[in-house]
Image 1 (tube, rainbow, N blue to C red):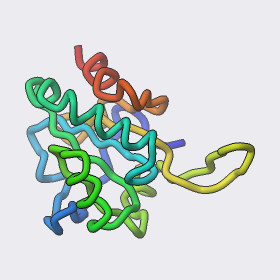
Image 2 (cartoon, rainbow, N blue to C red):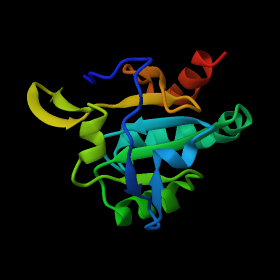
Image 3 (cartoon, rainbow, N blue to C red):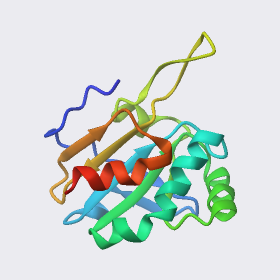
Image 4 (cartoon, helix red, strand yellow):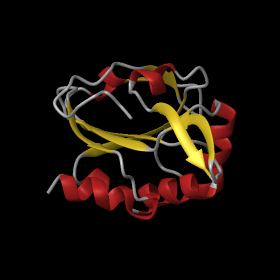
Length: 153
């Protein structure tokens, strides 16, 4: 579970997207940013979440939001995932987990009684000043974009 709280300054990040472009938090100064962290490309729940953001992307943009996804997958994996599902937003590759750890979303998970370390599905909404406005820790993958929009009403 992230030690970051609503009202904290968002940790700065610099990473490469699926096309090798460098993206940083400072690129979004003056904008509201939705950062969503997910475990892995092309897994059923992660695909549902990405496609939910895709299907409601225009509603998010209309509210002045930018969307970025993060996982420890490679740029190449992200490129295939984006192409396969026509995702309209960048995915940042974080194979060394520096950004994932900076946001405190690398932690213990359980699946079928097995305990392992992985990315905790979490969404951060960062305001135009780089402050964390909202943190969604119980992400509903089928309704991830609605959860974001509901908080911004």
